[in-house]
Amino acid sequence: MQYPYQIPDFDSYKIAYKRSVEDPEGFWADIASHFFWRKTWDKVLDWDFETANTRWFDGGRLNITENCIDRHLTEHADQTAILWEPNNPAEATQRISYSDLHKRVMLFANVLKEKGIKKGGRVCIYMGMVPELAVAALACARIGAVHSVIFGGFSAQSIADRINDAGACAVITCDGAFRGNKHIPLKPVIDEALKSCSTVHSVIVYHRTGEAIEMQEKRDCWWHEEEQIQINAGNLHCEAEEMESEDPLFILYTSGSTGKPKGVVHSTAGYMVWANYTFVNVFQYKAGQVHFCTADIGWITGHSYILYGPLSAGATTLMFEGIPTWPDAGRFWQVAEKHRADILYTAPTAIRSLMGFGDDIPAQSNLSSLKVLGSVGEPINSEAWHWFYEKVGQKRAPLVDTWWQTETGGIMISNLAGVTPSKPTFATYPLPGVQPVLVDESGKTIEGNAVSGNLCIRFPWPGIIRTTYGDHERCRQTYFSAYPNLYFTGDGCLRDEEGMYRITGRVDDVLNVSGHRIGTAEVENAINMHPGVVESAVVGYKHDIKGQGIYAFVVCAGANAAEDAAVVGIKHTVDKAIGPIARPDKIQIVSGLPKTRSGKIMRRILRKIAEGDVSNLGDTTTLLDPAVVEEIKAGRI
Ligand code: WTA
Image (tube, rainbow, N blue to C red; front, side):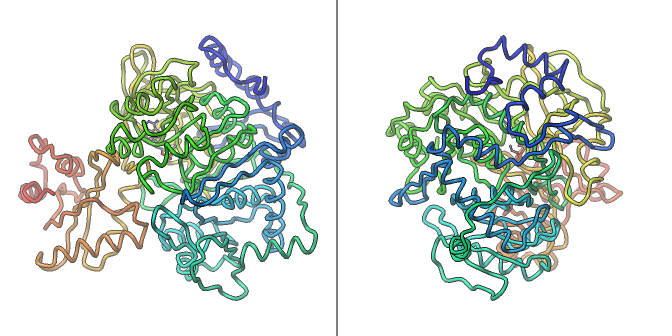
């Protein structure tokens, strides 16, 4: 069998789960033994949630690219590793075999070395979904540099914050990106960001859209020219750097309940084992299948289930540059048909938006190749679940609802496709190695079934977050201090009669807009940068397509006559500070915010107003100025 640790049936799942709890070290040592190590570990696990420290496979030495590429060369050198589908269907598909990928990663790794990038150095990657993005990330890993991929929708200011936080020495970018019928500038955004970054000495630019851009002498260079220099010098081979198991592999910034995004750090060995194990088991990947994950590599889903999970498993991973609705709303299905995709992993927000175009759109494509469907990023509502299962999977393909987070590195709670039972809108059972616990507000564990509470995890799994870059105390406080000896997820959850889990959404001030995590405090900070704004409060509300929409209540200085201009200005300010993904859907200019006598904003009231649930706002008598609530209610958008 290709993966000796692939779980074949429900009974085997139960046995694996039991062993993972009773003998976690033996369980994970067995699985880890199927990877390529330069030196095996001395100790499987060392952990202390009190200080937020976890070490897996300590003392082991390896390079993740040898596991994702080199080890497949003996038998699968010609197999397609990355199948790339461009934004424009008229442009040619690319098939990159494991052998090609090996060559391309080594060549580009030599470019990175030539630029003075070293083991441990941080490299920011800001590119569209081109195969070179995968090559860039893997080349960093090849030489032991730590990549920090930033989603193409973030603004110059957000990029600058992330580059400065990580102290990145180099940036890899593109001139621009194609998205639907748009050209998105990337290099000009980097130029703007770098005005406030002093640590970056090199910018490598991949030529994609051909738009005119400025190149700064000494600092900027072209990807293809640098590769040519290495080819001319005969530098085609690059030995993989030997890394420690716990050396950081990458940083990925994500939003929390404070104003400043955190750099989530993942390790080399533990992350690799977890991404691989969850990929192989949840999707039940079989040799030769095509895995189509529609996420962007700018998010954790792309890291784990376009790159590291599939490649470490020797799979064929399909990378799509475009968007679901261009040239028309059948694009996902056409891509799946064209490449005979076996697995389709996408987000509820995409399903909901495509559902709106009608059942006959997926019916126009031959989707008979699909064997497994997956959902990730937010709770999937029943209607979307059924539509995806019935109209796309034609009731043949099991649907996995995968719950996890940037911080968990890989899937935590999910059914295993066709192996463990599924239940619409339920992530169902935890993966082996994952021990969920529900707690109440006071931190008391809630035992038994048919209960709900805050979701925590009581034991480390290999993919757990190691630290938040440059500020370990922040990691400890955010995830390990709310409840003693538990990792707190920030999610609310219910456990049904059969012990199946359903994640109900965030219980903190984090919104989930189209599957993107956005902190309300972050959006408020951005809005408050607008010179006309005195203060603001941001809450989420139910949105049919996006899952949650962003509703901002804003107090402006001066007369209300300029309201329209203020709204436009505020949107523009948010675009500049964070990016269009954080732009509020609704902005209501108000004369004041509901506050307690001690000055605390009563978000509970604002949330209810935003949801349109104004009949019972609870006790408002403790408010400093109860009249303001009536005004806000009357002006609701
Ligand atoms: C939410 C994405 C319900 C959840 C991998 C979590 C989900 C946050 C699901 C993490 C799901 C993700 N069902 N909710 N299947 N998957 N979430 O870090 O609130 O971008 O905490 O990671 O998305 O978002 P992140």
